[in-house]
Amino acid sequence: MTDTTTIFHLSDIHFGLEDCGALEWVVREIDRLRPAAVAITGDLTMRARHREFAAATQWITALSAPVTVEVGNHDMPYFNLYERFTQPYKRFEGMEQLVEREIDLPGIKIVPLKTVRRWQPRWPWSKGWITPKALARCLAAIDALPPGVRALVTAHHPLREAGTKGTALTRNGTEALHELARRNVLGVLTGHVHDPFDIMEPTPSGPVRMIGAGTLSRRIRSTPASFNQLTWDGAKLEVRVRNQEDVSTPDMQIGTVPEDAMPPRTPGEPVAPVNQVPAADPPVT
Ligand SMILES: [Fe+2]
Ligand SMILES: [Fe+2]
Image (cartoon, rainbow, N blue to C red):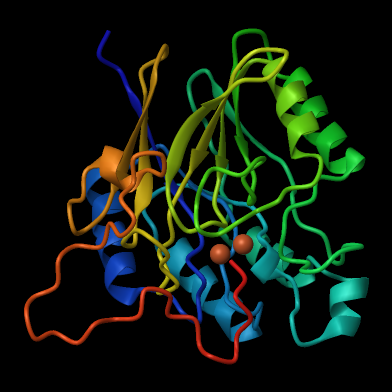
């Protein structure tokens, strides 16, 4: 049987500081390969501004594939603390309602796991935190799947550190991995750290595959803008890190990633800052 399913895993587009060239290329790749689904694992915006969500909505609704989105720490109001505390997901959900379409994958169900909080009893609030309620909701959705259907969990923060420059420090991540290992989970797709990885994480209940996507924003860390192209043949899930510079997947993924995986610059070209966060921004992912 040669039937395969292609899924594009995108993350951290950060509209407001998006990489326009990379996004144009992703649109062309979606048109060309027609993935069965596009999963975007959070940080759709830079500061959850209305105009950033409007740009995200416009870009996603024009794509020629069904899309699912998961909330990231940048997608909650940043300037309006009153709204952040009272209605943290209102803006994100407003966009979500407009862009999400039904996704039908053979033998796979995409199941979200929320890893963000409106506030945390620690600083910074950008790090990951899985509440018992969020984990219970995710596990209940997995447990309700028909026999044989495998869950592809989508979350914003990696459930444990993956050796990237950016950190997630996800609270309760170890417990979540342990619970996921006991279920029919194909992998956990995440973003946040802006560099890709593909790690088999051992737990007392067995291994869990953690797959991280890079960023499609200008807030790059160790690797150029990229997304993950997943191919599922019913037995094996293959991950290819797509990037315009054609850096190979093993070189893009953390674990074998060189200290600086950016392509060589032409002599005389000014050195671009590796992390293009405006000076006023705190160093959060
Ligand atoms: Fe993030
Ligand atoms: Fe991010």
